[in-house]
View: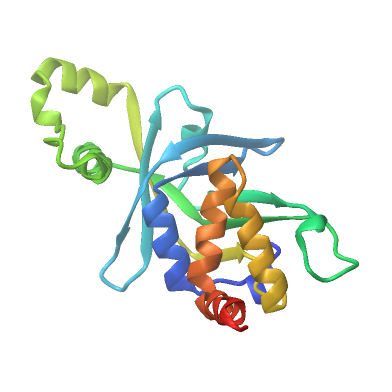
Length: 220
Protein backbone atom coordinates (compact mmCIF):
# COMPACT_ATOMS: atom_id res chain seq x y z
CA UNK A 1 0.00 0.00 0.00
CA UNK A 2 1.37 3.43 -0.90
CA UNK A 3 1.11 5.51 2.25
CA UNK A 4 2.65 8.97 2.72
CA UNK A 5 4.18 9.27 6.20
CA UNK A 6 1.54 11.72 7.47
CA UNK A 7 -1.24 9.18 6.82
CA UNK A 8 0.57 6.05 8.03
CA UNK A 9 -1.27 4.31 10.85
CA UNK A 10 0.36 2.37 13.68
CA UNK A 11 0.12 -1.41 13.62
CA UNK A 12 -2.11 -1.69 16.70
CA UNK A 13 -4.55 0.92 15.37
CA UNK A 14 -4.63 -0.79 11.97
CA UNK A 15 -5.42 -4.17 13.51
CA UNK A 16 -8.10 -2.65 15.75
CA UNK A 17 -9.66 -1.01 12.69
CA UNK A 18 -9.64 -4.29 10.74
CA UNK A 19 -11.20 -6.19 13.65
CA UNK A 20 -13.89 -3.54 14.15
CA UNK A 21 -14.76 -3.56 10.45
CA UNK A 22 -14.76 -7.35 10.09
CA UNK A 23 -15.34 -7.31 6.33
CA UNK A 24 -12.93 -6.94 3.43
CA UNK A 25 -11.73 -8.08 0.04
CA UNK A 26 -9.56 -11.18 0.08
CA UNK A 27 -7.24 -11.26 -2.94
CA UNK A 28 -4.90 -13.92 -4.33
CA UNK A 29 -3.11 -14.62 -7.62
CA UNK A 30 -3.78 -17.78 -9.60
CA UNK A 31 -0.70 -17.47 -11.81
CA UNK A 32 -2.51 -15.59 -14.55
CA UNK A 33 -4.86 -13.10 -12.93
CA UNK A 34 -5.99 -11.77 -9.54
CA UNK A 35 -8.83 -13.60 -7.79
CA UNK A 36 -10.85 -11.77 -5.13
CA UNK A 37 -13.95 -12.11 -2.95
CA UNK A 38 -15.63 -9.90 -0.38
CA UNK A 39 -15.70 -11.86 2.89
CA UNK A 40 -16.42 -11.36 6.60
CA UNK A 41 -13.67 -12.32 9.05
CA UNK A 42 -12.48 -12.00 12.62
CA UNK A 43 -8.99 -11.68 14.09
CA UNK A 44 -7.44 -14.05 16.59
CA UNK A 45 -3.90 -14.18 17.95
CA UNK A 46 -1.37 -16.97 18.33
CA UNK A 47 0.53 -17.43 21.59
CA UNK A 48 3.40 -15.29 20.29
CA UNK A 49 1.04 -12.44 19.36
CA UNK A 50 0.91 -13.14 15.63
CA UNK A 51 -2.48 -12.04 14.27
CA UNK A 52 -4.66 -14.41 12.26
CA UNK A 53 -7.57 -13.45 10.01
CA UNK A 54 -10.11 -16.28 10.18
CA UNK A 55 -12.87 -16.65 7.57
CA UNK A 56 -14.64 -19.08 5.27
CA UNK A 57 -15.73 -19.20 1.64
CA UNK A 58 -18.19 -21.19 -0.44
CA UNK A 59 -16.68 -24.49 -1.54
CA UNK A 60 -16.93 -23.45 -5.18
CA UNK A 61 -14.96 -20.23 -4.64
CA UNK A 62 -11.75 -20.36 -6.75
CA UNK A 63 -9.81 -18.82 -3.86
CA UNK A 64 -9.95 -22.13 -2.01
CA UNK A 65 -7.72 -23.88 -4.52
CA UNK A 66 -5.05 -21.22 -3.91
CA UNK A 67 -4.85 -21.75 -0.13
CA UNK A 68 -1.58 -23.67 -0.06
CA UNK A 69 -0.36 -22.30 3.29
CA UNK A 70 2.67 -20.73 1.62
CA UNK A 71 1.60 -18.14 -0.94
CA UNK A 72 0.85 -14.67 0.40
CA UNK A 73 -2.67 -13.24 0.00
CA UNK A 74 -3.96 -9.71 0.57
CA UNK A 75 -6.93 -8.78 2.76
CA UNK A 76 -7.99 -5.20 1.94
CA UNK A 77 -10.25 -3.63 4.57
CA UNK A 78 -11.90 -0.30 3.77
CA UNK A 79 -13.74 2.16 5.98
CA UNK A 80 -15.67 5.31 5.11
CA UNK A 81 -14.49 7.56 2.29
CA UNK A 82 -15.44 10.97 0.93
CA UNK A 83 -14.71 13.30 -1.98
CA UNK A 84 -13.32 16.75 -1.07
CA UNK A 85 -13.91 19.73 -3.36
CA UNK A 86 -11.06 22.22 -3.71
CA UNK A 87 -13.65 24.97 -3.27
CA UNK A 88 -14.09 24.04 0.38
CA UNK A 89 -10.59 25.08 1.46
CA UNK A 90 -9.82 28.45 3.02
CA UNK A 91 -6.39 28.58 1.38
CA UNK A 92 -6.08 29.22 -2.37
CA UNK A 93 -4.54 26.92 -4.99
CA UNK A 94 -5.86 23.67 -3.53
CA UNK A 95 -6.90 20.61 -5.53
CA UNK A 96 -9.72 18.08 -5.08
CA UNK A 97 -8.88 14.90 -3.17
CA UNK A 98 -10.42 11.84 -1.56
CA UNK A 99 -10.28 11.04 2.16
CA UNK A 100 -10.53 7.48 3.44
CA UNK A 101 -9.48 4.78 5.89
CA UNK A 102 -7.93 1.53 4.65
CA UNK A 103 -5.87 -1.34 6.06
CA UNK A 104 -4.07 -4.11 4.16
CA UNK A 105 -3.19 -7.41 5.83
CA UNK A 106 -0.97 -9.88 3.98
CA UNK A 107 0.21 -13.40 4.67
CA UNK A 108 -0.16 -17.07 3.70
CA UNK A 109 -3.55 -18.78 3.90
CA UNK A 110 -4.32 -22.40 4.78
CA UNK A 111 -7.49 -24.45 5.12
CA UNK A 112 -9.05 -25.08 8.51
CA UNK A 113 -9.78 -28.55 9.82
CA UNK A 114 -13.40 -29.57 10.42
CA UNK A 115 -12.96 -28.92 14.14
CA UNK A 116 -11.48 -25.48 13.47
CA UNK A 117 -14.30 -24.67 11.05
CA UNK A 118 -16.90 -25.38 13.72
CA UNK A 119 -15.19 -22.86 16.01
CA UNK A 120 -14.89 -20.37 13.16
CA UNK A 121 -18.60 -20.50 12.36
CA UNK A 122 -19.65 -19.87 15.96
CA UNK A 123 -17.02 -17.19 16.60
CA UNK A 124 -17.81 -15.30 13.40
CA UNK A 125 -21.56 -15.32 13.94
CA UNK A 126 -21.12 -14.29 17.59
CA UNK A 127 -18.99 -11.32 16.52
CA UNK A 128 -21.69 -9.86 14.32
CA UNK A 129 -24.69 -10.97 16.37
CA UNK A 130 -23.23 -8.91 19.21
CA UNK A 131 -23.68 -5.85 17.01
CA UNK A 132 -27.44 -6.42 17.20
CA UNK A 133 -27.77 -6.36 21.01
CA UNK A 134 -30.13 -6.50 22.84
CA UNK A 135 -31.35 -9.05 20.30
CA UNK A 136 -30.79 -12.60 21.55
CA UNK A 137 -27.83 -13.88 19.48
CA UNK A 138 -28.31 -16.48 16.79
CA UNK A 139 -26.12 -19.56 17.26
CA UNK A 140 -25.55 -22.66 15.19
CA UNK A 141 -27.25 -24.63 17.99
CA UNK A 142 -30.56 -23.35 16.58
CA UNK A 143 -30.03 -25.47 13.46
CA UNK A 144 -30.89 -29.13 13.18
CA UNK A 145 -27.84 -31.38 13.11
CA UNK A 146 -28.48 -32.41 9.51
CA UNK A 147 -28.83 -28.88 8.22
CA UNK A 148 -25.74 -27.74 10.12
CA UNK A 149 -23.63 -30.51 8.65
CA UNK A 150 -24.94 -29.75 5.15
CA UNK A 151 -24.02 -26.09 5.62
CA UNK A 152 -20.52 -27.02 6.78
CA UNK A 153 -20.00 -29.19 3.70
CA UNK A 154 -20.89 -26.22 1.48
CA UNK A 155 -18.08 -24.03 2.83
CA UNK A 156 -14.35 -24.24 3.53
CA UNK A 157 -12.74 -22.59 6.54
CA UNK A 158 -9.59 -20.55 5.93
CA UNK A 159 -7.05 -18.67 8.04
CA UNK A 160 -4.45 -16.09 7.10
CA UNK A 161 -1.32 -15.81 9.24
CA UNK A 162 -0.82 -12.05 9.09
CA UNK A 163 2.78 -11.19 8.28
CA UNK A 164 2.45 -7.55 7.21
CA UNK A 165 0.06 -4.85 8.44
CA UNK A 166 -0.30 -1.59 6.52
CA UNK A 167 -2.70 1.20 7.39
CA UNK A 168 -3.53 4.50 5.73
CA UNK A 169 -5.96 6.92 7.37
CA UNK A 170 -6.02 9.89 5.01
CA UNK A 171 -7.90 12.63 6.87
CA UNK A 172 -6.08 15.78 5.68
CA UNK A 173 -3.85 15.69 8.77
CA UNK A 174 -1.18 17.70 6.92
CA UNK A 175 -3.41 20.70 6.26
CA UNK A 176 -3.55 23.90 8.31
CA UNK A 177 -6.08 24.08 11.13
CA UNK A 178 -8.22 26.54 9.16
CA UNK A 179 -8.34 24.29 6.10
CA UNK A 180 -8.81 21.18 8.22
CA UNK A 181 -11.84 22.64 10.02
CA UNK A 182 -13.30 24.01 6.80
CA UNK A 183 -13.17 20.62 5.11
CA UNK A 184 -14.67 18.80 8.10
CA UNK A 185 -17.47 21.37 8.34
CA UNK A 186 -18.24 21.01 4.63
CA UNK A 187 -18.25 17.21 4.80
CA UNK A 188 -20.60 17.27 7.78
CA UNK A 189 -23.17 19.04 5.61
CA UNK A 190 -23.13 16.48 2.80
CA UNK A 191 -25.98 14.06 2.24
CA UNK A 192 -23.99 10.82 2.07
CA UNK A 193 -23.08 8.80 5.14
CA UNK A 194 -19.42 8.44 4.17
CA UNK A 195 -18.81 12.19 4.13
CA UNK A 196 -20.41 12.65 7.53
CA UNK A 197 -18.43 9.73 8.96
CA UNK A 198 -15.17 11.21 7.68
CA UNK A 199 -16.12 14.55 9.25
CA UNK A 200 -16.60 12.79 12.58
CA UNK A 201 -13.24 11.05 12.27
CA UNK A 202 -11.57 14.38 11.54
CA UNK A 203 -13.04 15.77 14.78
CA UNK A 204 -11.64 12.79 16.68
CA UNK A 205 -8.22 13.10 15.06
CA UNK A 206 -7.58 16.82 15.67
CA UNK A 207 -10.03 18.04 18.33
CA UNK A 208 -7.73 20.94 19.15
CA UNK A 209 -8.35 22.44 15.70
CA UNK A 210 -12.07 22.68 16.35
CA UNK A 211 -11.55 23.96 19.89
CA UNK A 212 -9.35 26.75 18.53
CA UNK A 213 -11.93 27.58 15.85
CA UNK A 214 -14.65 27.78 18.50
CA UNK A 215 -12.59 30.16 20.63
CA UNK A 216 -11.91 32.38 17.62
CA UNK A 217 -15.63 32.44 16.85
CA UNK A 218 -16.38 33.72 20.35
CA UNK A 219 -14.00 36.66 20.12
CA UNK A 220 -15.69 40.05 19.70
